[in-house]
Length: 374
Image (cartoon, rainbow, N blue to C red; front, side, top):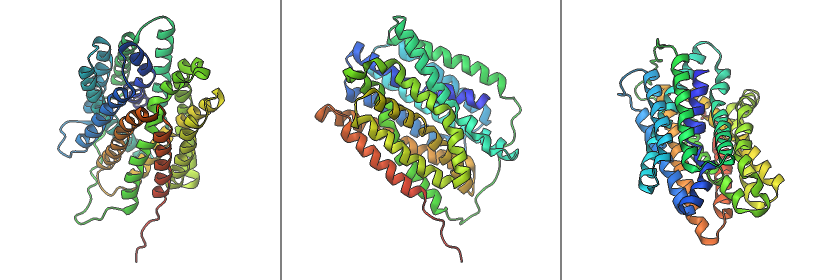
């Protein structure tokens, strides 16, 4: 439960609350799509560098201490977004928040997955990753409720930060002080990396690029289309609610068809959702797009990380961090690319279709067979 709450606060709120708040910031501060995209990418740059830092073998201290500290930094950087109007400060805060969210993901996931593996209950990992869906739903409720009450973008950030601090208190109480010793499985000298893990890392990076454009700009897309503007306050909630059961569903698919095939199928389903976000402007199409996005991206994340753990021959934290870094690189490129591409024809069509292609390629890479051993 502690891991679920931590993921909800650091990932669902700390990383993704920017999506529903962004249209309010654009309207109040005059942010362009390019500036909004750079802000999102700065958070993902922090996420990338945080993942690389979290993978360092010389990081001192216990995993519990690191992820609680990172959760505190995530809450602080989220709330601090509401006390300034400077783009430079925004960039710094989103960067710091990205670093913190990567540390939470890597250390909390390593801690939780190791304990589940030792207990022979790795199938319950879906509950851990479902926290992101809960966090997205919570962020949508916070933003929608406060905006309907007349609060501006600054209050939306402050309340989101307060929510994350409450989550921090809950996590500190739920996670015991005594930590299980981390697994000390070290790769033997000369061990070759499983090529399936290499291709999975690349696929995970393409997935990061493939999902993030829609995940960043879907609220803006809705606000920009007069016929469906009424959905603006609920579209992000649809994404979050769809994400809550998705991890358990895709875990079931992975158990039934294999983790690699499950990952590939989910990428293809998500590609359909991303395409739907730009090929039609009816309410039913955009809602379906939100359902497919929310119903896949955390499932893909969970399948990818669990599969990487099974393919690892060394320290699981390093494999998780490598996956997270690739993901961070992909999602760092996506919003900036989309924001600037939007300036050419005032449309997200081209960047979204590029994202569709990335997801299709990711699906193909995920099912590369194991090498023949003689």
